[in-house]
Length: 234
Image 1 (tube, rainbow, N blue to C red):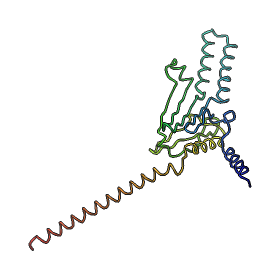
Image 2 (image 1 turned 90 degrees about the vertical axis):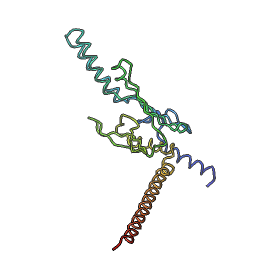
Image 3 (image 1 turned 180 degrees about the horizontal axis):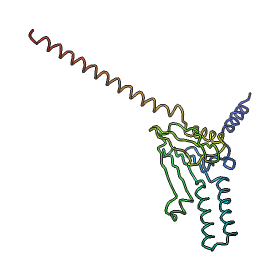
């Protein structure tokens, strides 16, 4: 096999492992992918917009066919819109920056934004990239809709944080593909296991030193007691 054919085969295998592009991905969209930065985005899906339109339509229909006053009609429409916004998914972003050693998770909630009169609604979480040890797919139960899947970041401190606040329904392969991409980008594996192994070695060395120190103290005490017994007259 010629060198060009080998190169073409390796390239095709590499692209086969890549997740689907931004226009086809369901869990998160790849906004930017460089050697040092991986920027992911997630927007409310069709389910959220369908709920918004459906519940708002119920309020409009109730107001249209009702013989109540205008105030009550406005209450019907406003109440249904707020219920729809409460059940709507958030806009979410995740930025993995290897040059800065940071993981930045952003969340924007339209419901919280409107409820607090634009004072709140943005949330930001910063994590230390050096403490990241694993990325795994976790199954969650979505109320009334079945099972969903979400990526979970496991840190060296024993603390875990979900990559997104909302799980995606019925697309485990898409979530697993994104997890594989993140592991390749961050080079998780042997390079991340070395610090943990070094910590275990350090703890082992400290334990051995403690045992040796205890043994020396025991020998000193036994020798002192033996000297005292020899000096004591019978």
